[in-house]
Image: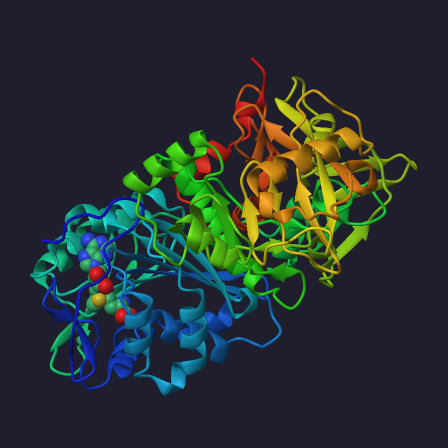
Length: 623
Ligand code: SAM
């Protein structure tokens, strides 16, 4: 038996390759049929689940959910994706969700070898391989085919996953290894959970026809048929959930108004528009990304805790999701230079030492480096060891916000102050200071610390603005690194002759104007952390440009995203909050936008219920 690795790594599958076909060393069974795995998938899953017909019936803004036990090589997933693309018009917004669980994920290189079998699926396989997440326990959302395909891939035990994930399946692919070799996958409790994630009419298909599986499925509410199996397998099962568990699928409540066009609001606007939802994006400034998201450069950065607890898992999930999200914008505003997090003082050195002892992150997400390696990576002398995040980097936040509003389904109302937000006739009415009334079915308040003023409920929200001033460093008056470096300050590589460093963290200062003192503070901190950046020509603080922004944080420094709940916990229909992203907004925004996009459109959630809990809004009320 393999030893469990330190968190958050998960054990990869141990494979034996025979004639190019992968077999599990743990379970002694093949991942797909030796003769023709793809024909088997179509025979066992695609055909009996009537996917072609059912895919065609999904409405233009609708979605279809396939859930699978055992992701393995992803062959079933690619077959379903390919079928979806065949059956759906090219220009619609319907989404195929595929929710799959895997206890022993294949490594990326094994995935490449396994999927090289299928030249006809090559393009899809390449996209999956490109976005395949680091092998970290927990839930990963992959957005593929421009958003038409959303894969929720949970690395962990099937029973845990099904207790934590939020979705209702339209079709189940039950695909563990053979029940005699893999009893946990077919356990009665697991089948009960399969039933809980089903509704009247949910279909099920599986290669096995074992008597015990049949009994469990029947007992938990499925009506089954025995069909001819594939190849040497005599029988297989297909069926339908017939117990009464209807699900009310509410139509999309459009338009959705989003107040605040910073990185949170624009990422959400893009996300919803991409799913076919019309969005009205409102901001008091004349342009998107004018406030906290308006710095010329921002680092994609999270601080991972020493303990791998819910908070750390949420941060790691946000980091890896945002790296995949921004990857699509490389030619626009995203600069994946990698990021070094330096142990630049004794406390941080001690923290990183404990962090490295207690955790095992996959090297595609994070690797510890010594000072020499750090210097080689950054291209400037560095005196401290640190953590290297090869997939991170920096982005131009205001450009990002501008690009994310360019979807044809997003209408914008900029330069628009909101006087009030009130419910009226089952809608929300947003009154502007020009006396105009804008109407929306749902409203998301994503206005940073200004959110508190807009919430139309009694009680004060625990949100606070924190002043941060950044400073522009001109090249070549400073020696600049080729990667982002974070420590007591962050420093970006130069772009167009300047690099941004910062930011100050001024808890009790609400001065919106840049000051020489704040520039000086940034310069001193930088000199202390990275003396090699200074040159003999380095200008003084009063000759440098600065920019002030106010980040919004919560009392517990964790973000908020979800349906607004009053201080009594009662939800407010159609009103959502997305704020408190603090100085990590660039890392939080893509994941929280994906999560809120799921919630608003009632699609499977990208976060487990355990990770979604700390985002809830109720905790913000002062008691
Ligand atoms: N659907 C896969 C494909 O398209 O390649 C093949 C799945 S393979 C037959 C069965 C998978 O179930 C293996 O990848 C195995 O690691 C996984 N598995 C077995 N026991 C599990 C458990 N208790 N929880 C989650 N996954 C499990």
